[in-house]
Length: 511
Image 1 (tube, one colour):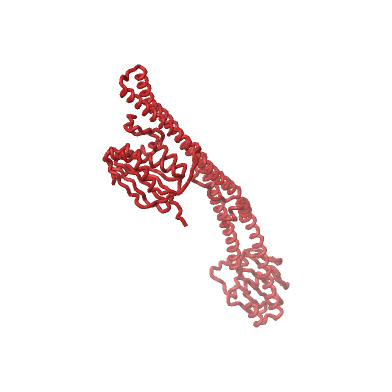
Image 2 (cartoon, rainbow, N blue to C red):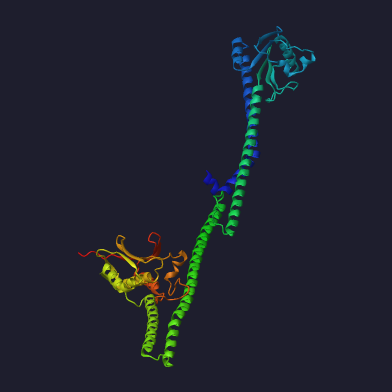
């Protein structure tokens, strides 16, 4: 029913208005018409009943048995014998003949008359209206002239008076209760009409209020959409038109919300890319500054010693050899910086091919540590190895060797909180993690991302105590990302120190 009202509300409102008009105008008219017909029908019925009773009495010669039978059918009877001037028959209840005229009241009677007095009154009434001739007439109301053509139902009793030879008779039927029933039917019809009208008015007012409420809700939601608030949706509406509007607004809200969300995601992506580009520009600027500084020092040294040699300041062969060794050392440092930059460039451009092979990671680590053995002994570093057993991995040998060399070199050059270095292998299922930890001060959290940038160093004095270039971690990052291997750095409070690590895939077991 609710869905029917929602879809056909305008038609329903029109039907309500029509029904209201029908209940207020047409229905009472129809009720009055049928009430009038009912009255006429009842009048005809009662008239026919009185006429039938009178005919039966006259036909039987006013036989007492017939009089009783007529009385049982409804009418009350009073028969007056004109010859004997006495009551021939009287019903147990009075016929109230005196109600059809004023003679009795004019006579000054205040008590209810008896049957003999009623008969006397009846005798005078009949003589007055029909004389000595035989005939009958209806008296419908007190003080109303006789009407031989019919009667109405506005009185308490309906009378039929007449004479036959020496007998004067009167039949009456009470219609008081019938009148009350008709009036009750009329009142009930009027009340039903009024109730139906009020009910439809109430329903119409409530429905109109609901429509207005739905319209206000839709307007509020539209205003919220204008403020880019897409959290609300329009509720269901009564009419088909409002429901279509609701569906359109909800569809528009969903579409706008999706587009706004897409724009927000795009904006976040653009913001992230812009932030990364700004960071890269800053890294590039720092790279150029660091590179200029790193090249400026050896160039200045080479230039100074070369001028000294040219000016003959090195008088002895030993001094000349010292100057030449310094020039050579600084040239090698410049060559190392340029070589590593070129290597990073080739990795980033993808020019260096990747060759994945199976090799023993333990043997590689031993070879790397042999390279740095003299430096480790010179600094008195305590080296711990946890690389027992063979560990075969499958990846690019040169990239892994270059990365581990940079890790070990970085651990040796930046040891500053003790003289301990640990190299450990950890089993990670199908991968193995290589951890290189040195005893040094922890790296601040905001620096852990920057240390992988080219030529970035936390030593803001820019002094090179061991000749490092600041490109080692950048090379590790490029190698691991190119191979798709994980890498990272973490502070190790239990060592204590800083741990750099890479993860390498294990080689498939040989069949």
